[in-house]
Amino acid sequence: MDFRQGGQAIQRIRRERGMTQEQLAEKIDVASNTISRIERGYLLPALPTLIDICNVLETGADSILAAYITKDTPIRWTPLAEKMEGIEPEKQHKIETILDCIIEIL
Image (cartoon, rainbow, N blue to C red; front, side):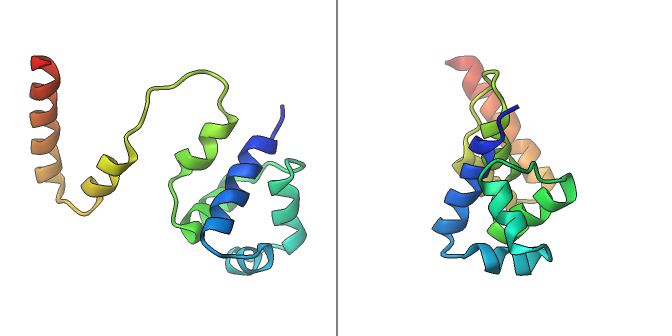
């Protein structure tokens, strides 16, 4: 399996956040060469490490994992997901119901 695409996604997001490999490594408590190896595709991060990377980079796992998936998957509308984050679960359910109705009408 080729892990370069996932590593490149991590690298891109890290750079967008203005963070060095050393800074990311320090925040997730791994060696900086571990981040280098992940970004170059030589190492697939363990789940706890991937979770730490996502939390530090403030990104969803799908933004990284999508690069590893070869099969087409449904499109996820990130702006909507981001708007829904701060809403109470009860209101989220109401919004989902409204969206279902709109989709059904279309």
